[in-house]
Amino acid sequence: MPSNQTSRRAAPQARPASRRGTTGGAPAQERELRAQGRKTMQRLLDAGRLIFERQGFHAARVDDIVKAAKTSHGTFYLYFANKEDLFKALAMDAMSEMEALGDALEPITIDEAGRETLRAWVTRFVDLYAAHGGVIRAWTEWQFSDRDLGHRAQESLLALSGALSRRIDEARGLGDGAHVEGVACLSMLERFNYFQQSHQIRFEHDEVVDTLTRALFEGFFTPDKAEPRRRPRAIPPRPRRARKAG
Image (tube, rainbow, N blue to C red):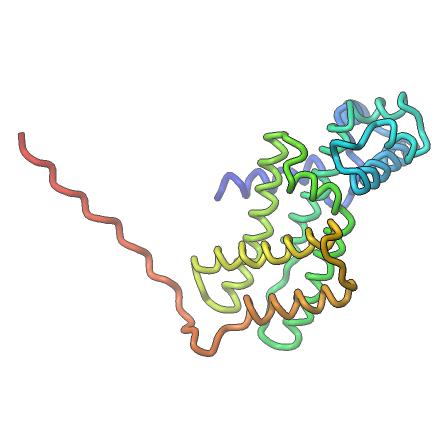
């Protein structure tokens, strides 16, 4: 996975995760924005996030976004080429923050301190998913078909599952077996929050955090008593068959 790691590290240089919504779409990237311009663009991004959340990607219109932002069509096109361009900017923000969240996952020790560390991280995941729910659902449901954006989304998910895999391996010594556990762990987190944010289920915030923390801590980070702490052996390559003469 070296290529994924390289591309993931290169992205924040162009779009820092700590400056959410400051780069904008293609038109905005062609010039340096002043303070007022950044504020206007942020209003458009916030309005776009709201409209995508309420109406979905396909039903959303530029007209709806400019009304929510209390600005004009002309102003919108100074910063974004179209609604797809605005969606890309929002999606890149969300993915950058997801990647940063993976980097922020600290070692999970098998004690009460480790549980609290995990709970704090799960809280951040739940809050981040809620903030970007409409955008995340749009690319999750393939409402927006963009190959480059799809590849970047895949890299973000790999980065998150990789961070979880490393911490699970530290806690349980699973070696290569931690990869599938990391993916399973992320799948639980992502799907639960997807159902929550798409209003298919509805639970209180603290109840969600407590339940997910308990499930992850006991199911993925706490070694089973019967589980030997070992790393799997490498499987030797199969011997080649000798070629028949003539």
